[in-house]
Length: 115
Length: 114
Image (cartoon, rainbow over all chains, first blue to last red; front, side, top):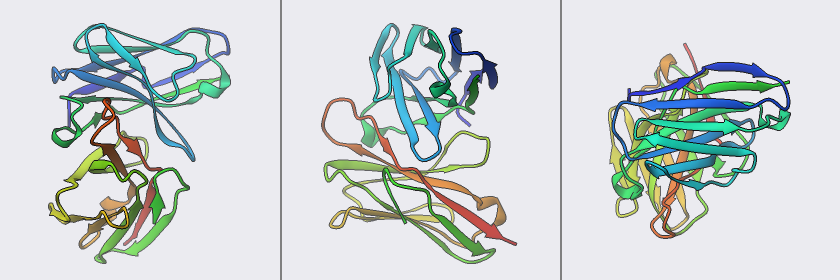
């Protein structure tokens, strides 16, 4: 398995509270991604990073922010959690975004419940 | 089968049978395709990939077929085992557009009966 860990693995929080999820990799891959997975929707990209301090939005970025201060860590923050953000969150890494030479490898996921 | 973006079908097979999981992709500009396996409570796991300049690629017990004419991808699993029970989904990535971010299908649930 690719060296990707996510923390916490499970979290229950209340509406309006801030939440930060952490993704840590030991592969020294340049690209990191945050996805959410919901029944009936599959994986949807929230944000991604193409280098330290270089990030961009995905298709469902509203209500989320990210930071990457080191190659190995990519943080996802929900500034004020809402019930619609209850989901399973996956981090992924890849060596490059040139898809024909690249594959995304996924972490184990974080199950977030917002009450 | 599934379309990238539609609901989750289920395929039930007996142990030892061959399984075929289908995926209809939407973007004719996609040039790289991946099949993932996701077991309950785990993250997606890479199985096999194929580029658009190929029609077929084989791995260990798995084969991916690509038909660009009808924008169809399939995953064949030989001698299916109970450990193959999982959700399988395909991902397509366009050759152009700058970001090369893949689009994921919602998956097909494979159930293998002993």
